Image 1 (cartoon, rainbow, N blue to C red):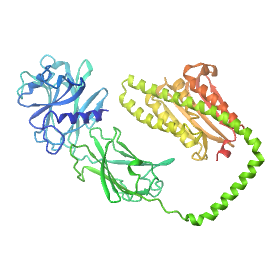
Image 2 (image 1 turned 30 degrees about the horizontal axis):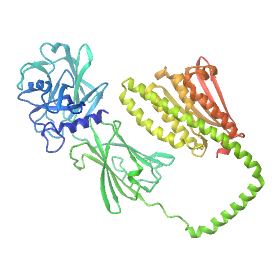
Image 3 (image 1 turned 135 degrees about the vertical axis):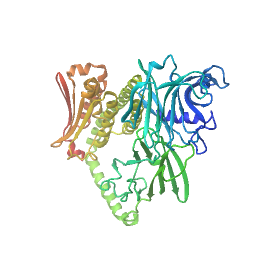
Image 4 (image 1 turned 120 degrees about the vertical axis):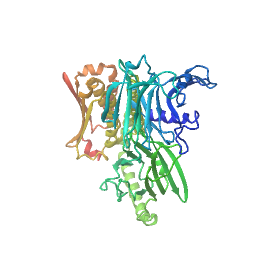
Length: 579
């Protein structure tokens, strides 16, 4: 949200002064820049602005806060009481970047590509208040150049009508500096600026995660990448990446996280001689961009491009990273339909004969079993339909808790993961059976979501002899038990909490086990807790499964003492039949 807000702010700057912006034609000018928040008369919406005040009359910043001075603005107020002002080289271009979150505050970043000085003043500090504030300077987020110290001095320059706080003149070519000013007795009254003198902003690729139907892998690992790419340059960018149409569902590009920069992604497509360029949007705050399959659904030549955000894109080699790939047509069938026709007809004839004999021999028995299975299946679907809203309501409750705690970054990340998980849950909700692999993926994403909120640890122990892609299980079978372990087991333990999910086979039985080290509970307590509604539905669901699959019954056991709980689900004779 911080990066997005700052990009919106950059757009608003263009309406304030023709000298302020991101384009090659824009320069900093003989000004000081101040951050303010203004309320529009027409919409009554508060919006962030950057005001440029001439360096010959810096005191004019105070006149900007008088009410009814503008036809469009109802009133403006400083972003903070400190009223930090920045002065850079008047000829400097492309100086705006993004903003960096510091707990509840956002510090703007200024790019200084010419190694010139940066001057920082605090108009909100005067003779009366100078002793109430302190400042510090940190280099590259690691070295404290100046520990918390008194404001260096008061000065009265640039047409000022009264002395103001002079924080300093800074210069650190090739490095980043954070200057932070805070009130001594109230840390919430603070503000800061980040100056970045680096000149190489080319994105750095970490990995490309390829998602295929039912699988995913790192493209940069030749033993795993299905021979989709074999040549990589010095930055580990694939040079011969190609794959058949519809074989890949998405490409997740991960770049090295650069907090002081905003990067935007583009896609160039050349399909049957028709070339177009799409602006995809910004990388997220963690350096990821997920390119969905709909953008490369047709055979053709593609190029994924990432560069530092600028007002006017400049396609220079040093500033951007190009990742080319090619979508090819599916390989032709080894045998033609005409060649396969005789065998197909023979197979159909044998199948029809076999099926006819089978139906005649078992007609009465099949009718009876069919009615029983239909009734049990309908009941099972009703239970599943009740479980899905229950799961979604619990997830929304978690998001609400994060927002109430003002953990906006965690809430934003939670919402992103929750959206993907919801799509997955809705996809499988109408399926009576899903692969064990999909069941475990849903469980892991849920644990990742709750881990954001409670900070516990978790571990999956999966029997390597199990073919999890081909073993099918009822959808969302173990998630309610994991949810119960989080809510009633380890939620109060935070970092000391741990949940272990085990899946293994015993002879032909499939066993799920959920273990937590939280406060134990008896089955009576579990069955009478309001939040264990999901557990009650799960017990009903297992009962209906036993009616539907009488030769493969499922059993639930709960082992709990004063500390820790172990929930075990055993499905008899499942592995041999599931394969």
